Amino acid sequence: MNPKPSRPHRGVASSQTARAINREIILETIHRRQPVSRADLARLTGLQASTVSLIIGQLIDEGWVSPGTLGRLPRGRRPTFVTMNEQHVALAADLRPTRANVGIVDVNGKILRRETIQFTAQDMGRPDAKRTIAAIARAAAPMKAAFKGRLIESLGISVSGRVDQGAHKLVFAPHAPWRQPDLEAEFEKTFKAPAVMENAANASLFAERWWGNLGDFRNMLAISVSDGLGAGILLDGHLVRGREGMAGEFGHMPLENSGPVCGCGNVGCWENFAANRAGLRYYNELGGGRELADFQQLLDLAVAGDIRALRALEKMAANLARGLAMLVAGLAPEVVIIVGDCTAVWPRISPIIESELIAKSFTSRIPRIVPAIDGDAARLRGLRATRTKPRPAAGISLAQSRATLVLD
Image (tube, rainbow, N blue to C red; front, top):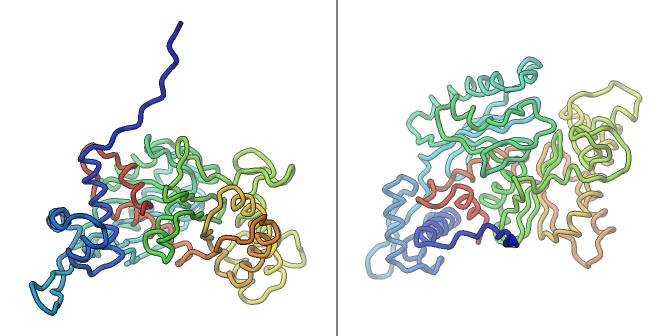
């Protein structure tokens, strides 16, 4: 009789794991409380003063933390405050199906420079996306030169698709023209720097968690609304990735039994009724004027008070809320963050979303529904969050280290 196959065992915590976690705790505390003294760090984290001093010394030596001004006390030795070292910056590239936003983001999440690249049909037609990466590299070159004195230690890549963090592969991107499995490796080859690739919704969640005003919440959803629709999921303080990083593809759950064919090959998918393409379709279906091919045109018309545009966006918001009601019922988030261009008309669409959730809720409370603090720039800032910390200690995987970003 063959023995029952055993499950892969979970790694046990070692002293290296503890040290790595303590480093992350101290870094996050410095980020949230800066400028802060070593004594206050010990009090705030519960770590021993000697441990705090040792780690702070290492972080200063590595260039991640800077000693600041001297504090004042009624008596005794004056404390030295520490801050995050703003000399550390990252190059971030947010890839969309038709364009890319490229920027330099500092360690405190400030976007120092940003540029948008529109892709041509020729760029998008090449399955290996080398032309696309080359265009991004050309745009990034003057940015890197302008910040030559800064420490540009890595490249962050946001994609409208799902990423297997273990294999470093893009595994699902139905709307993107870059489908080769070695996209991250191609970026590293072109830029000659380590790269980290992340799903756009997860990156947006990192941005809100790290730099927003929602740090105390442990159950959050970030809904990325663009050409497609995806979710970043934080449950009990843990980022949920699922098998091969596929957790969060709620845009492809069926909302209807019919409808336009989705990029995934099915019909009736939620994103076909609630993503940007749906808003454009609703506008064009109303008739009575020119047809639109660009979502920004639709937003501009809505801001100007065009009734047809406003009705299209209201229908898009109502369908966004329909799917969101199922997620709220099943995942019980405290906060839902909407990320995307549609937040430009937030006063118009937020009451529609909230009223739908209230109507469908079986409890007395619904989660807070908020727009991303900086619209689509959340994707760039979130990429900075994935690279805010030092490289993990030996024996700790990058995925394990990054996961601590969303832990209290």
